[in-house]
Image (cartoon, rainbow, N blue to C red):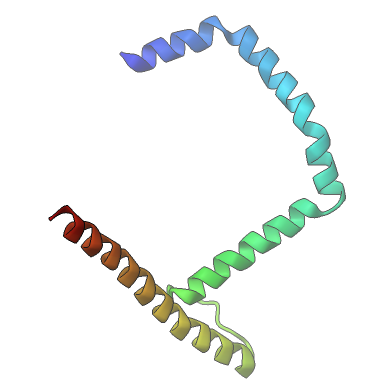
Length: 107
C-alpha cells in the first residue's frame, strides 16, 4: 500500500522531479568535468581498488587465481596476511570488551 502512494506521488510530480534532476545535473557537471580533466576521479578509483586489495589480503580472503609474481611481493603478502589476523583479533577483542563493560555497568 505504501509503495503505491510513493509511486503515485512520483507520477504526480514528474515535472518537478525532472526539473530538479536537470538543475542538479547542471550544478554538478562542472565538478565532474574538472575531476575527469584533472584525473582526480581516476586517482580516487585507483585508491579504492588498492584499498580493496589491501583488505582482501589483510583478512586472507584470497583473490582466487591471482598470486604475487615476485618473491618480495609474496613475502609482503604473507606479512600483511599475518598482521591482518592480529588486526582482526584485536578488533573482536575490543568489541567483546566493550560489550562486557556495558554488561557490568548495568548490574
